[in-house]
Amino acid sequence: MKKIQIIVLVTFMLLSLMGCKPDQIKTDNIRFKEEYESINGQENESGKTTTTIEIDENNSIKYIEQQEVIEALLNGTHVIYFGWPECSWCRRAIPVLIDVVNQYEGMRIYYFSIRQAREDYENGVDSQLAELYKEVSRVLLLSEVDFTSISEVDENGVLKIVASMLIFVKNGEIIGAHRRTVPSHFDSYEEMTAEQIAELKEIYNNFLQQMVIDNPDGCSGC
Picture 1 (spheres, rainbow, N blue to C red):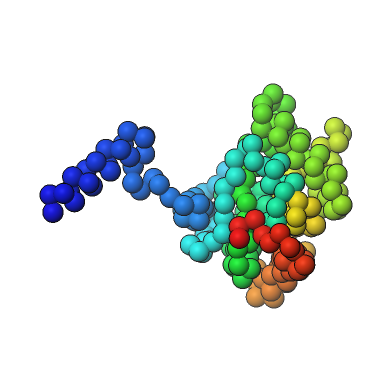
Picture 2: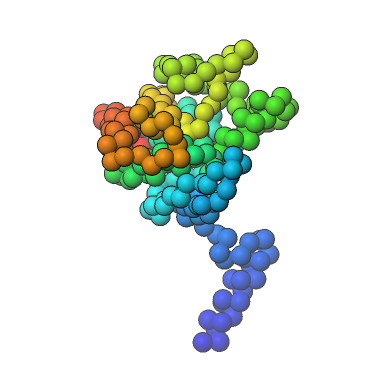
């Protein structure tokens, strides 16, 4: 018993020295769930009540860092999700996406919060995030997907990366993209009907099925 206590104490001391506590060591799926659910029901910047959502703990979310975004767009087979927790459209779309992606074994959702990068660019801030935003725009516009059909390009030729924006990548090639939910869903603060959810799932499934059919490399998370 004394030996076990010593091991526990030493482990705690090591964690403290590394600047973290045991409950701060979380996998990405738990981190994402807590991040998005933590603002349920709170008043947002617009004075509206943030939509309450429940994120499946068994999600395939993987956070990617600033320096990994372009690599994710140009390599592998996965979904890339650009959004942020407070985005009302994201909060409607992401639980549906997670539900669908969970049906595809090994498929990952790479997540990058694009908000600060977009704000830096739009406010003329000279930052690495603003440069990343422009580089992401360049990669998207050079792909075979017509991104101008789902968003707008400004006077500098930079695509506005709207939230939520999903990018479907197969073997390093962008094969599709989707924003928000479905055309008949006009208000992000209103729940989708069962028919609208089914329609959105069908959209996601169509992309994901293209990604797994005849794919010798498999998916990035396999």
